[in-house]
Length: 275
Image 1 (tube, one colour):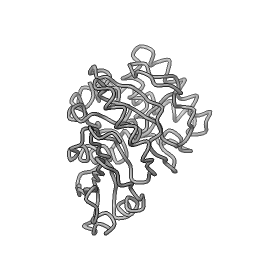
Image 2: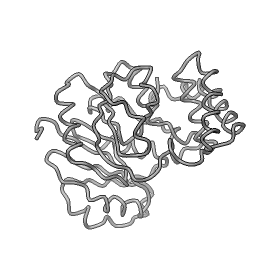
Image 3: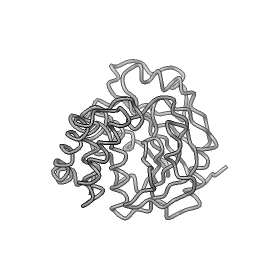
Image 4: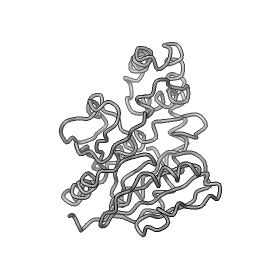
């Protein structure tokens, strides 16, 4: 066992049925590992006895809106040396969690790390460890519950509240923007081919249809992270989305371009969480 670093798993959930999902996760009890749950739209419902009776689980009720604000609230309550972002419908692998601790302990300069989950298309994950810079590995994209941060870095990083489920206009991409914020601030960021959990449900990257809000967010992300090549990448992304059946070509292109045109304003208004 790696005893020198503690780890908090920051789990977000929503509504009474969400806390019931957390209870059903059967979170593994492990030395030096805690679960910090931010419970949004809780409706004053009681905490399930199976969670309330455990010393390694904290429940924090949260009255704000949007998934990014919920994740930020969970981060505010974490005290572990390492923080692993979680979700309310995962199956955690104790050996994967322990490997996260070992990797951070063995790499004292590491500030942010991404890992694998049994989830969706596994071919998107690189087969070997890789440094994460402004250009990410080919075909790689991040899901929030594959992300871990040293707490010293997490204290300066937050999810942009204008993005993610429950936001007004940009309904995804919050985790990719946080990763790029860390990279552009000079943090040491790496990917490791270690599987930490399984996720049985679809995510934005794999769902059958994409909404205008999700496509707009992707347009902002492409514009902010690809520079002068963005005008070439937007129609390519629209074509790929239409080819996969996730939206029509016209809808995809219109929403992506709309987001791209709004990108500079989004960044200007969100310097604290972006760059």
